[in-house]
Amino acid sequence: MIQMDASSWSRSLRVLFGEGMFAAVGTRRRDDWRLDAVDVMHLRTDDPRGWSKVAPAAGGGACGTGPDNPFNAVTPGDFSMVFPVSRTGAEHLLVTLQGEWFQTEDIPDFDARKAELISHARTMLERFGEDALFFTNAATARENPHADMFRREGVHEGFTSHTMDCGVVAVSGTEIGIFWGFTID
Image 1 (cartoon, rainbow, N blue to C red):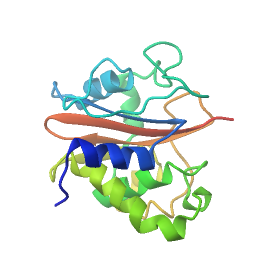
Image 2: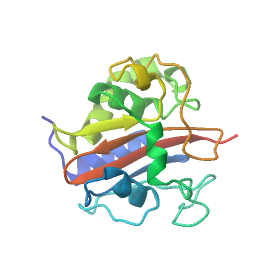
Image 3: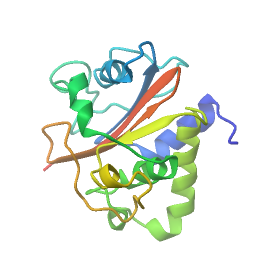
Image 4: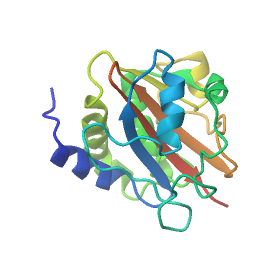
């Protein structure tokens, strides 16, 4: 098991998430996790541990809670477009969010950095514990939650008005994390 603390979380967050990406965690307060997920997406909740988040708007700056937030129109019903994905699949998806079209071939020096990037993704998801559930809008998971997410089709059920968006929702008994990338054309 990975030692999870604010320092390791922040280090992994800096490696995996940057401009055009969204990473935030909130408290799980309700039985229907989708309601809490919307709160995290709309930035209406703070990280329960006080740890770092990344929520930049397209082109820089913070996306905030208004029209610059890419999730401003998301409702709980939109989560009918997410599919269960294995922990390994979720780790791989966190890595692929770095690629312009969420594919490994768009990640600079991927082959040389693959193990390091997976380690950072594993560190981030470890926060949610062994019993966590993971969901994605990557359509490959619809038929097979254990599919190889490094070699998946580039089809995603979009949550935003961006050309393409892809992400992972991590759900534990106490926290919910939203990790998303956007292709802006």
